[in-house]
Image 1 (cartoon, rainbow, N blue to C red):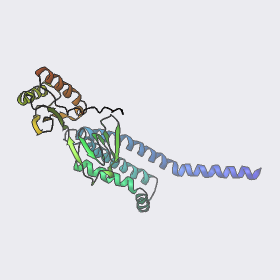
Image 2 (tube, rainbow, N blue to C red; image 1 turned 45 degrees about the vertical axis):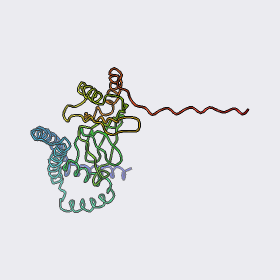
Image 3 (cartoon, one colour; image 1 turned 180 degrees about the horizontal axis):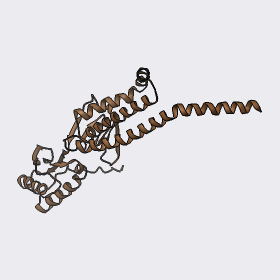
Image 4 (cartoon, rainbow, N blue to C red; image 1 turned 180 degrees about the vertical axis):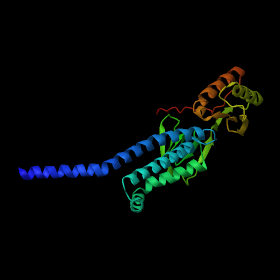
Length: 276
């Protein structure tokens, strides 16, 4: 019993001594980190408002704000470690060795980060543009340090790791796309009237852009009639739905003007011959 009491008293004395020796340091370090957290957020907000004056892409502005926040908090972290009495030089050396091991283990993640920085600063595409890359295509919705997100035509999301984008062949459609529609009219129809009718329909459609001007021309002389190529420019978001507006309008207008749409002749039906 006396041994247990002595052990408890000894432990209590040791804990009291440790608290008196390191308590103020720990409290001071905690206060420094708390001040660093609030300062980091405050400086980050100021930096974000200041960068809005410059013509920077959202990913670039976000990256710069994050760098500023990390640097500010890093300064306060070093101050907190000094208050704890930790030698910084051996710590930096240890972190360097640990960082090398972590870098080897996270090659894929670091590859995404490096590729993300390349995309953010080289700007091969921007948010809102329509691109085709790595076998997929869609409208760019966001670009982060690790991946790029596209919005597909069916409203689904395609998330591409940045390392799959850097160094690949990129087709950037921008914010405009050109439709490729065709209609075939018979050789007996009035070609000039057909072209004028199509031009009038495109001019009256609010989703068809006036500049660049749509291209409408007799593209080829086919086996069954004249092939007319219709290539209007539209915004990316209208690319999928606009053919459903233009094609029925052309059909209705051709019927009103007596312009006949060509069709291949129907094959004669084969009749079975009955044996006599």
